[in-house]
Length: 92
Image (cartoon, rainbow, N blue to C red):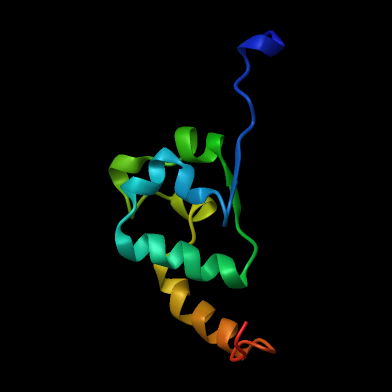
């Protein structure tokens, strides 16, 4: 396969995940979970995971979903961890 035929690598981070077309396929609760968790834990996925691995017709039961999108069940813990960070209550 030639280099021209390969798709360009496209990473998504906390700051850019909303630009992914698949973002709209998540429920508002799932979107909130991604945002909350990504403020506490490192978050990075890529176009290949979102387009090729996750079966968007089988959400939330697709086994590859946790690899690309944090689960909402982790959001409550992430909120606690974020609140416990030094300076979390300070105005910024």
